[in-house]
Image (cartoon, rainbow, N blue to C red):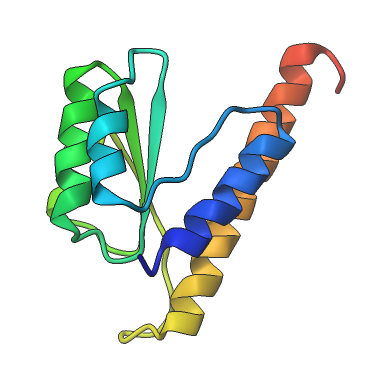
Length: 128
């Protein structure tokens, strides 16, 4: 639940690009929604720690339905990172990152994704 504000920030950025997006923080909703995806769906999981078992379960169910799963996290080598198709890692210079430093790294990663997607969308539409 500590990563929910970051997921909501990502959702806001995706919506600015005209992308359909939903943020789920309830485990039951994750289970239900992971059954409703298909090969044209990208499931973005935002987890600073990469450890919640409920996210691993939802990730695996989404993959059964051929969705691609991308994890944005501050931890590599977790069960969630191993289950995801793509892993985007944040980093801080501290060996013991605080909530503030890991949060800043997460926002920077989301803003970078937004800029890259915006540039790609502009070049795809012929606007830039």
